[in-house]
Amino acid sequence: MNTPVLSRRTMLRGLGTALALPLLESMVPATRLFGAGAASPAAPAFGPRRLAWFYVPNGVVIPNWTPETIGANFELTPTFQPLAPFRDKLTVISGLVCDKANPNGDGPGDHARAQAAYLTGVQPRKTGGANIKLGVSADQAVAAKIGHLTKFPSLELGIEEGKQVGACDSGYSCAYSHSLSWRGEATPVVKDCSPQSVFDRLFANGDPNETAEARARRENDRKSVLDFVLGDANALQRNLGSTDRQKLDEYLTSLREIEVRLKSTQVETAPPEGVARPDALSKATPYPDHARLMLDMSVLAFQTDLTRVITFPFADEGSDQTYPWADANVRHHTTSHHQKDPAKIALLAKINVFHMELFAYFLQKLDAIKEGNGSILDNSLITYGCGNSDGDRHNHDNIPLILLGKGGGTVTGGRHVRFDGQPLNNLWLSLMDRVGASYDRLGDSTGRLALG
Image 1: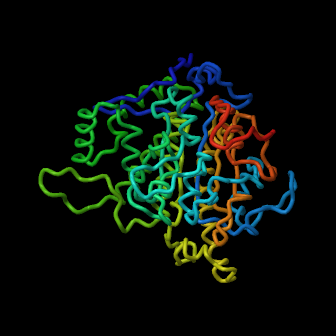
Image 2 (image 1 turned 90 degrees about the vertical axis):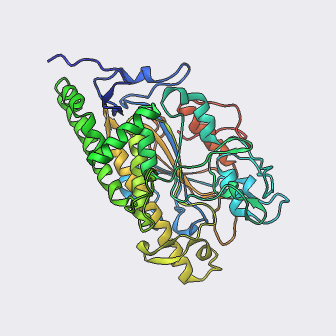
Image 3 (image 1 turned 45 degrees about the horizontal axis):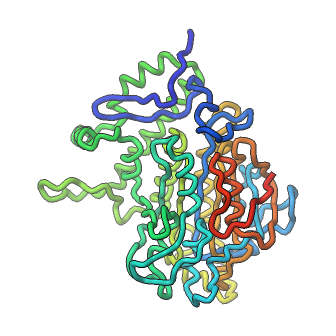
């Protein structure tokens, strides 16, 4: 059988639904997925390069985070134990500084500054009013260069809704401590925290009227989005090779599983007559279930190449979310001010591990999706860190930071590297180069890091 060459933009269609497909081997060569001037993936990887920033608030237990040994022979610290399956794709980066999170004459407000400066490298203007001022974040700078290659230039996701108005931290606007992504110096990008909302954005066909009709039909018939594209999917399956048939089947199965889980989290109270049911999680939905659904949305977005840029804070700076699922039923921010109390440090360490376990869940999903001789994780650069170092001290030197993935063969993992005193934005510039989004400067950057 001669397998047809498919366009990368092939969709499954049916009754007002257009469903994006994962990257298949029968699609156009990966080198044609990159814009002018962008580097193609190094062999044997196959697929576009993705870049994501995951953020955790309130600092970490540094002794449980930073390995003692530099180089390839470092031991996984207690916080990194969930990452053991990905050791060869893990780069621990220590010694970097997020200077614009420091007071620099502006007094208290380290939590607001930490989140605001993390991706911008810019000191936020201290104001609780409408005259906020910061700078363009790294993710939006990347989106400006390569965002035209995908349906969504970037996705801003999260779990905590947060606020955008009013003062939240020592006179700083809530926009600073609840926004990781900034499109302009006065334009924070509000994150989407609803799995249903993200699912609908990813898999709608772009026609608001037609999409609303299709969604209503699905709700009335209690059908899956897949039921509307099943005929198209079956026809496509018959013309695919065995590897692509298996990949497509796994993808459709994962979509159906997510839809089933989403239904279980919906608010069941009937709305007033004439009012559409809101896309919302039940207030009783546990944080871990919410988080994993959002992580699944992130995986789908990368798998279908609907975006190559994602930001994802597990919580916002100053968050007092409790974590009974981690045997730490205490308020996070309050506990981070441990004042060297061993009991509080032990609880904070459990929260740190819990977040890392959720991150490992995401990594496992990416690594299981094959692209040529590699995986999506091999073709990605996924960072995880915080603008605060020790939450008790509120210091912003030697910030906790790790990098997962190989960037299509441009990064050698399995190492602990140290760059004492260099700006965090030097790392962002280095990663941006690897996805075809180079800039001379970003925020307080002074150069690039030699990641190897």
